[in-house]
Length: 244
Image (cartoon, rainbow, N blue to C red; front, side, top):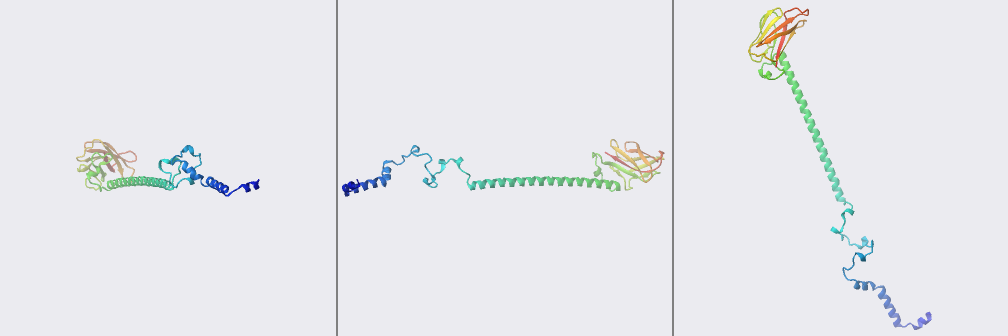
């Protein structure tokens, strides 16, 4: 059979056959390109999952063609998020430190105020004890619990003017006198001072067992009675204070 084909093959046959093979093999794409109009390929002409990354132009898919929810966060955005969280944490830490500093300052101020009050009270007490406080402003009217007058009876058995003995105060600025009425019985007068309201406290003074009490008061005078350990009236030194 090969012998018969060989004997019947001519140059024309070989040439036409070769041309047909070339047209079908190498020129088919050109023919197809001429047959398919531009921009005529739609989704239905494309096999699903057949378009690969290599078939797409770099940076060719943009904007509305991209579904954002399918994309991973780009590195710069992730770094920005971390930076924002770090800034927020830093601000929160600073706010916490500021709050602590404010509380510490308040505590310090409160401590200072307390110390100042204690110092003031101590100064007042020391002044009362020594008689160094003489200004009526220290014991102004209306200040509850502070002294309106005080005195130390330095003479147990005689009348005495205590005005300038260094341990006496009368807010009115008037004289302070003691009358020895009888054994253990005294009347002290703070001239010009209204003793209405307030409290009066008296106490025996010295190293013995004598004790004293208030027998009553009115206007600007106060009665004082003193006793020994057996309860008998006896002359004694004593101190007295009138408070708001």
